[in-house]
Amino acid sequence: MANPKQTKSEAGAQASENSTTPEFPICSQCGSTRIVKDAWAGWNADTQDWELSSVFDFSFCLDCEGEANMEWRTTPLPRPERIARLNDLLRQGHAPNGKIMSTAGMQARGDVFVSNALREVANFHQFGEDNDPHQEHDFGSFEIDGAKLFFKIDYYAPDLKQGSEDPTDPQKTTRVLTIMLAEDY
Image (cartoon, rainbow, N blue to C red; front, side):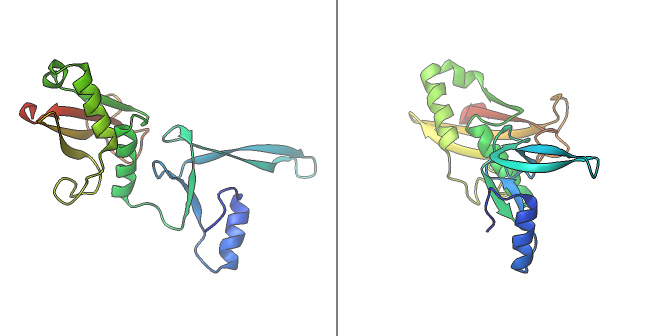
């Protein structure tokens, strides 16, 4: 694999040497290819244009709006995996354009119950064929204090008036996670 600190030309040169498909960076959190790095450009008087002179270590993901720990890939992430990564970020409270809601039944059980439910949702990893047939990590169930709970994630346009046209694009999507008692469903 390519070194995460490599420039595009260095990564391309390495790919050419290895006779493989060129690699590109993705965000390890959300799978986005919209990665930027801090860099310096210097003016070249001969070409009358700015030229890249230095690229620094810090990488930023424009989609999840955080530092990007990059992965190098030769193919894009499959759609379900990209959606699952964005949903995981939301469950953990780190997604841009995301909202976490709970039902009145949940609220009636008190702040400690709601706090415990939020922690369970953030740490939930029991995805399988029964609760995650599309592999998008958008539904789960668990128990707290003998009560069965569900969470589900829906995808809306940023104005929340209709569904999202592309749940893989955080700029076009507001994710809404709802936590509820099974009896509220």
